[in-house]
Image 1 (cartoon, rainbow, N blue to C red):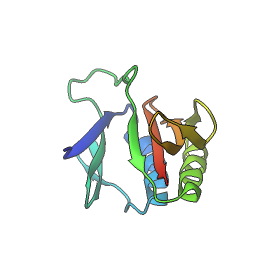
Image 2 (cartoon, one colour):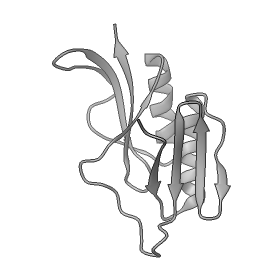
Image 3 (tube, helix red, strand yellow):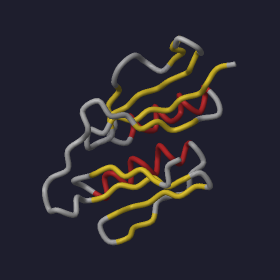
Image 4 (cartoon, rainbow, N blue to C red):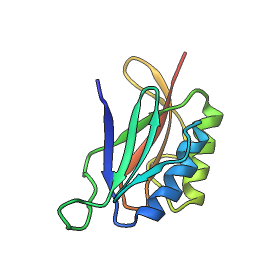
Length: 125
């Protein structure tokens, strides 16, 4: 359904460091820069960060979350640790199992250095 997801940043190098670390845990190669943007590409899509093209400071979405898939709970925990070590902020509950109406999920949430809300998710069983 999606070709890519892009979030804004006010500091491209800080974002590159953060996402190289967190996405690297998920097996994604380091990002590559195209002018004022950095992209991380996989078989299933592209994630990017960009200095806003209108020249205004970036802001994050209130109520928005970007979720990345993980294969194991250990990978989720490593992702969370890498994010904290590279300028991210822990939010919501600590990484762990959440019970939804129809399934259990292992979730870990962070805010990136610009305040964007991101998470990883593993559907259980």
